[in-house]
Image (spheres, rainbow, N blue to C red):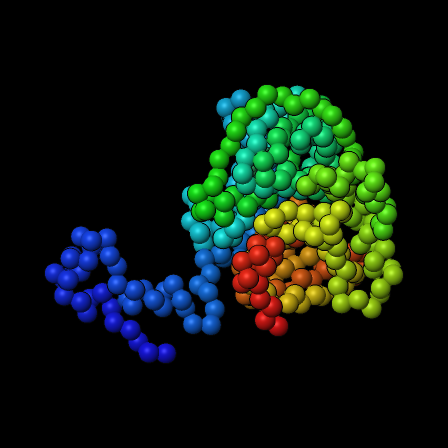
Length: 346
Ligand code: GTQ
């Protein structure tokens, strides 16, 4: 590839004349913005151990009352982007949120989409668009763009969950903002039970479901786990055992920008993932697994979370020869497909 002229090649008077007109020559920066063959990846393989994070999160519970935090969250920041950017990858934000018994995180709505993967504790709930969603370990709860949400806790021990938002992307596009609101009236709960049986949906003639853009807000872990175990039994020859969290009315991605799935590693299984353009986040729900990201290997215990840049080989291994391991995955696939930049390389 041809070496291009640099800024220093240009006379200083010319450079100053350009700057004075808010003009910039492309060629000194062309290779930086269009590198050959593969993008420049700021996202670094990074792992956040729950064992190290948990005491610091609980300490935040003592240091900062919920009224002074609104959302009491420690952000899982990727040093490759700079910690102050509060991003795990180009488009994903991760945060561990703590709610103590009797605390309340007030109602608001915002343009970024959020989901919560429940990590620890019982008795908390989030109310989304009037629907009260109880939180249990492994449940996935959606807070799609523009829907009111607030968190409460009637239990007696700390509750922790992992927030996954497309905040970095929405912020970058200068469309990120919040609206504060009053406590919501609860109008329903467990609406997801209407979709709990595969292959049958509420009938369109009578259903209120089909006119809701986000018909399913809560994906109980018991159901996702049972689907994985059943899939492993039904298709022992399958390359991988994985379920996607989808909109049950359309079968498409459950949210617009980020994609979510759960994967079961069979006892002793080693799984080489296809090399694809989207960055990925792995959160271990159950078992023990290693994640090798192009030679960087993280060993995940339950509740540990790591991220991998796109365009990078990733191999997942179950560290147990006798028990399955279960991994929650978030990635940027829906966005890449919409942008037309989605790629599979191997
Ligand atoms: O729970 O609504 O981690 O608004 C960041 C922003 C959580 C939330 C985050 C939020 C929330």
